[in-house]
Image 1 (cartoon, rainbow, N blue to C red):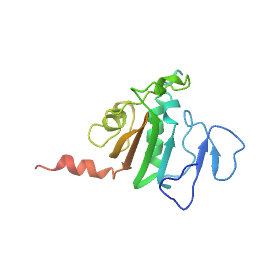
Image 2 (tube, rainbow, N blue to C red; image 1 turned 180 degrees about the horizontal axis):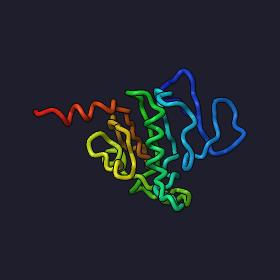
Image 3 (cartoon, rainbow, N blue to C red; image 1 turned 120 degrees about the vertical axis):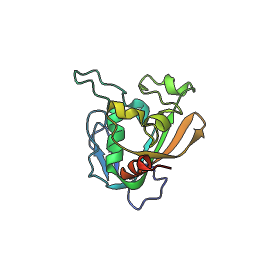
Image 4 (cartoon, rainbow, N blue to C red; image 1 turned 90 degrees about the horizontal axis):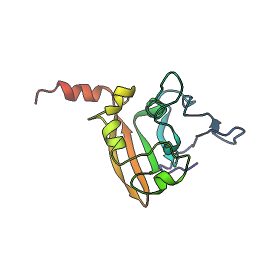
Length: 161
């Protein structure tokens, strides 16, 4: 586990079984994050989300990446932070690994999961994130999102000026 926010205690989720410490086994492409609502101040995903499919091939036509973003939003406290570090387009490393099935671009988070556009809402995204910072670290896109109070966008939309 990595702890860039210097949290007092760390927890992890991994697809493997028989894990030690505060690491719990779960397949986040098909299962919920196994923690309570608003449990975390911080959630991190290092070299992970590129492995989560955008769409499932099952009959329900589920959107696992959108479901994961809903789950991250659910387990974060209001004003909590989500840090994603992932190989991204246009760099070859985004495509090189055959298990990379979710190609991220610099527009994925700001356009689909932000408070302004929220294009992922058409696929079932119900959260509200503010993009705090985004930039490149070599071939990895580093994105920091903050969970916003869901009432905040409604307040903005109701303002006349």
